[in-house]
Image: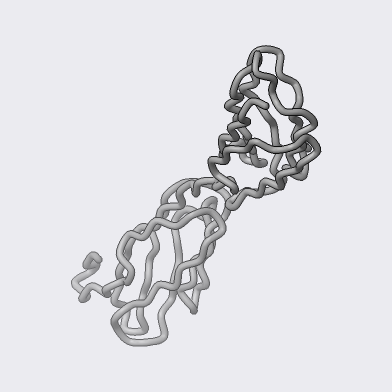
Length: 173
């Protein structure tokens, strides 16, 4: 909070929150209602001028939130929009299965479309694929004893370039 033109400062709550993309936060203030809310960086979000509800956009950054009460008292705080992690499920998985099994992978925190890929196969193992748009992994064949245990990395990348990953261990047949 700050003081301006000799008027008492208005307390803004919460003080300096960090929000993930697309999240919302309701700000409150001390003083005499009604309140007028504004911000100095409309690239990262919007605030309801009478409600104090801030909604983050998909852009990272910081903005100062300003409030003025009906008596002319002012206050401010900052809000920061941060990246949220992409969480892939299942996380780490070890399988010794018969060919033909599918494993549906999901991702939380993806913005836009998630694109799935698979990497990490060694010793010419090519028996596993993943559908790029759905994340469904298909095990067509298990690795042979000569190919050994395969530690495969399942990756998903969203429309903003953020990514998440999981590991799948295929035990030799």
